[in-house]
Length: 147
Figure 1 (cartoon, one colour):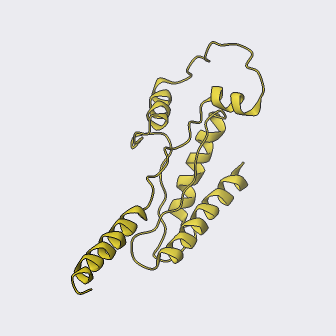
Figure 2: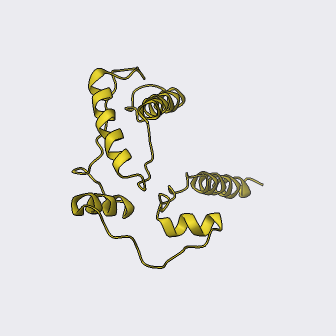
């Protein structure tokens, strides 16, 4: 019986380690593709023509293409906003930036955006998720009031 104890403890240790490894978090899914063809295909509406629309502005097209490819559009037409520590209130600077973003969105009605609220690593994960959601909601509500 004593000969089996080390073997049993090694086996249980191996089982515990393999269980912990299998409980890893899954990889993040790729961002959705917001192209018009996919939107029409998922909604069931047929497309009228197969040719793509002509681009209006080359600088706008390049930043939109970069976003579609998952690349950073640091020089793109839409700008990020910042929030004060532990706050979801929009500052005057953030409102001015959102106003400029709203003007661009009005002139590019076919563009799709995803609004996300981010936090730094300080604080509990649940609290940061809630604060990020409040920040995104505040930005979206302000954009909606601008039209």
